[in-house]
Amino acid sequence: MGDTAKALVGFMDAEDQVNKGADAQDLKRYAFSVGYEYPLSKRTNVYGALGYA
Image (cartoon, rainbow, N blue to C red; front, top):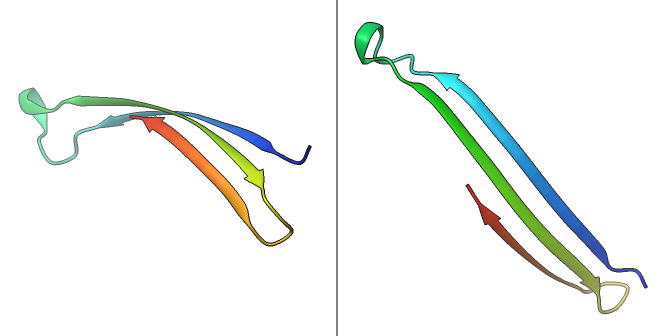
């Protein structure tokens, strides 16, 4: 077939470096995405992706 499905899952855990002490915050982020690529010819691909962070 030649088509390709893709997926991504990401996670970030960081600390606030600007505000220290009582105002400091822990930062946590999650990211998810899925994509699909379909070759129309040797030189042309159609692709689409959807992500959420």
